[in-house]
Amino acid sequence: MTNRLLSTIFGITKSSIRRAVSTIMHAFMRGFVPLYLGIDSVTRESLINEHTKLLAKKLFGNQEEKLILVLDGTYIYINKSNNFQFQRRSFSLLKGRPLVKPMVVVTTTGHFLTIVGPYMSDGNNNDAAILNHTLKTNIDDIRGLLREGDVFVVDRGFRDALPLLKDLGINAEMPSIMRKGEKQFTTGEANASRLVTKVSIILTGYYYA
Image (cartoon, rainbow, N blue to C red; front, side, top):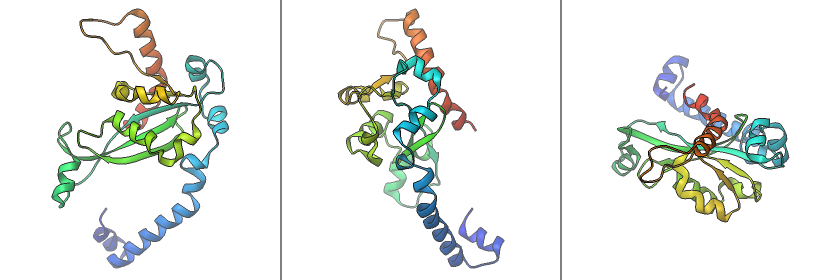
């Protein structure tokens, strides 16, 4: 809803609406966000013990104290901008409309750990590129939370980020990729892909809610 429409509904000026929205945003940032949202609001032990499904621990954690996170890129549609440069960078050829791309990081129970971005929708910002940037620049001090042997559950769009994850000691669980000349997966590859889908499906409910 625009400030103009809100001012009509509440019978106050647009400047009053702007001040009210700004005040509310600052209040949230001071008293709500640090306590309930983001990496600093929860401990590693809490994420493992309270926000990790037993099934995920059995499939990928070997019952050890490993942090298992599910990552995926999504998109938010926006209005067409009057700024030509921003308009070009935010227009998605795939979707045929302007959008921005955040990356969601959740636990296997669906607890939101952090949302990175948003990034522009140009071709350079695919899922793998966003994850590489997040880890290399240590956004939200995410690397301070991670330990060697932790698990990232991702889709095939993150395949170009696998070398960096390996260097950091992070185990990536990703559906199998069919090699050139193959017509179907082996039984082991197909079952391994199903296990990844079983854990990562937690995000599907959020996307279609």
